[in-house]
Image (cartoon, rainbow, N blue to C red; front, side, top):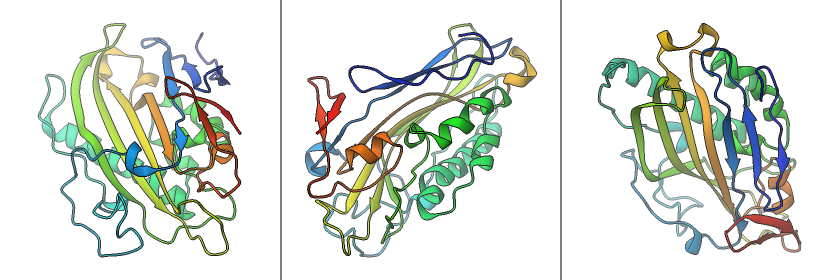
Amino acid sequence: MGQNTPPAWHYTPTGRVRARLGRLPGWTRAVALVVAALLGLGLVSYLRYGWKPSSSQPDASYYTGTEAENWPEAADIVLPVALAQEHFTAGEIRAILDDLEDLIVLGRVDWATGKSDPAAYVRAHSPGMRQYLGDTLDGAERLALVSALADGHELLEEVRYTYAEPPTVDEVKDDEGVTVLEITVKARFAYYFDRRGQRYYNPLVVLDTTTVWQLPVAGEVDPSATGLWLTDYEWALANGDCEEALAGHIAPAHVGSKEAVLDDEGGLTACK
């Protein structure tokens, strides 16, 4: 795609959503954002405990007896300390990770508790990427970026999280030879819904996310391309309502609601 071309979102036959973002001069490589929507019932077979963050555990609650019983509150999400890289000091990396923690809380916690701030979310990214994020946050693809609840649904508990794998921070070269700090976060977020008056299969919905951010070395790119870029992501939803997820919302699957049909590769093919 050429520069200033908006993302061409579309559903492929396998139900995955793909987009390409063109970058401004100095960093023009188009990047593919792939959303693998895996919806279904049953958390135990789907979720695996990986590395757990070193945060204090919440008291007993509605999560007691569930997969997320010992997960910390996502509002206190912690990205681990990273070593200095050739072009980034340890202090610079720590500041970047602190900003990312705030961004994750904004997207995965505040958005789900009625405190969404699209302008702040967009501002946290590179000027070259901001033009694409606004429309995405308002559209059906928002769930890949933020946790918007479906209308009429509320949470009974705070959002919790764990890591499927330890976050990684590496200095790498992108396809154009630009030096970037690449941060990969594989996190799971638990949402416990108020089921009063509802016929949910399970009030606990878990969003599994893989997100990759890149921050280019300032001297190697056009000034408008400096800052944070969201370059790749995947998400999967367990116990979620299929149609709501495809519309960009999180909601538990109701008895009788349409469910996901998965193909052999685990891709969403249809709702039934």
